[in-house]
Image (cartoon, rainbow, N blue to C red; front, side, top):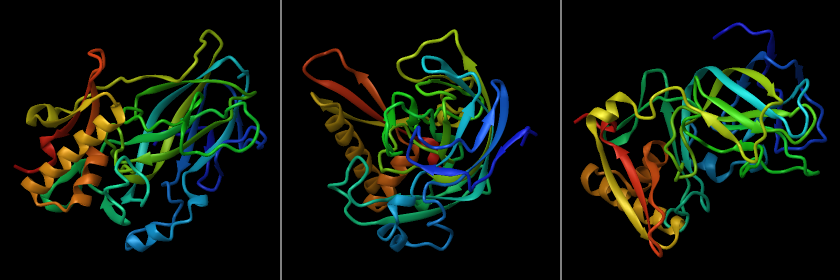
Length: 312
């Protein structure tokens, strides 16, 4: 972990976004900060926890955001450039099915929890599967200009809980600034996540992050943008290939559900997983892609599952 002049400890958190809050740190443009980022349960789930922890979780304490950070010289209409220089995960993570949440709440009504060992390069799962560790941040955002407190779950114009799996080490996020100082927040770190996070969680984990914050007066954005400086496909999955299911119809959400249901059915049939295990494996490792959106009235969503999750 690189040495930095500015440090945000784990206790420097907020819940939701509000431009009325005092910043916990003030830094100049170009500063590098070391941020301790907690996992999204805020300590409510630990090794040894069971599904009861999901049934009784206090959602008011979920998704803590480290910050806000005031960046000097940032004004409404500017852009904050966030270079993610380094990420170091904690030793464990977890994934869960929250009743009523995720892409398929009507299919999975019961609470479920799995605690992952993150001490190696791959996190073991059930049924002989293991997931390569690929750290990323779910929440990188500036505070919106609207008054009041705004929940941390939905992504917003200024970023926030975008859950983009490629926002990892070496990437750069560009965020529209709507308030003086930008009031940056960082949270929701994952050891791995599939595009779509279909089950409602990635591999939720704590993380130490080093980031550089730079005010850009030469840019104007309506929504966040980002740069990725690494291959989008890991070498092992490229070599092993993918199994792909699809959903076809006029509604992208319903198509996504159909594609994921088909993959769950295949994992149950070919790998012996329980349906909820297959669902959550999809959440941390399956990538949804819009394969076709121009041939009205029907569109195609594809669900890619890497073959390198399994040892055969």
